[in-house]
Length: 157
Length: 157
DNA sequence: CCTTTTATTGAAAATGATTTCCATTAATAG
DNA sequence: CTATTAATGGAAATCATTTTCAATAAAAGG
Image 1 (cartoon, rainbow over the protein chains, first blue to last red):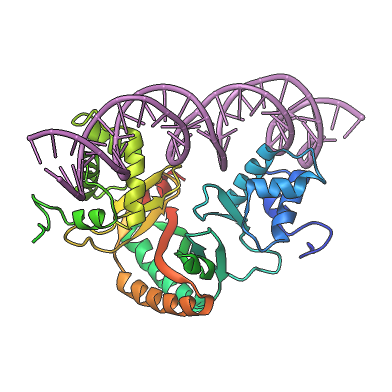
Image 2 (tube, each protein chain N blue to C red):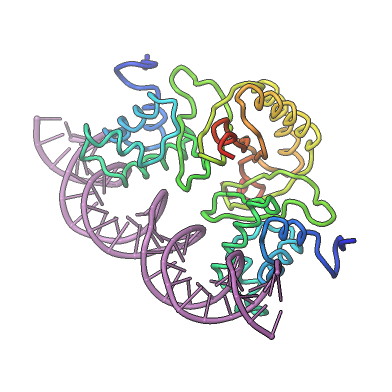
């Protein structure tokens, strides 16, 4: 039985192999960083966190790996308005809580929220069903974000 | 009385002046292009459409104007995954229909939909109210997009 | 209408995140 | 263990967007 969180064959190895991708150190390390943080890391963020321990892993590889991961659906890519892509594990071994984002347009801070998610999901599912049929569109994913000013940035006004 | 759609002082002149911005030919022309299309134009798209008639309006000005317009809330900026910002008039003189987007990840085509918008808006308003209070966040805007494959791209699979 | 103030502009150069190139390395099949 | 070929890193290239800076032109005040 594949291990769900610790040592041994990791949960994502199967998916990787199934798609013809190889398991490499860089990929292990990158997924490991992502699975250990709640933050929304950019490619360079990941590079920095890795570099001291793995000086031989280049930034290019990080970009490439994030691309693969996003294509496999293991990682979500977001744009929070700070001119660089930011990434989040789609679903950790324990199944991360589904959430959406509040994005502060003042300081680019991002707050994850799970409130109202159930209502949102219910509506989204209905909407997706309706839209799929009407527009002959196979919906794979959705994005919901709220933009505004966080407490700090409101004070600065 | 400011004219709502034709000649004379345009609906947005007041807002512009009020914020200390000047009314210039470039801005007139750019807003005019945006108000006459249903498409989601990029800065370069606008440049192309303008250039033959106004060869003296530079791309830089278009970027700058779109920035001003977005800051004023007259225009929305979107990322549909084709590596360039795309713009849409927030609300024409006649009050454009509020809508959201279906984005095809295969060909980057975008479909505007208005279906379910009422239900969405109702939920969004409740959610916004709750989130504003809980996180002390002043919500100014939201983004909802669905990603998937359009009919054409499904066929190509 | 004319002058002054200063926002706006265009062209060229700079920026910076992301990609591409290509020779080298290493994961996997057999 | 060897052959096959995906993966890698470093340097160079891309390319949308910004910045710089001198020239232009709105708008305000006579």
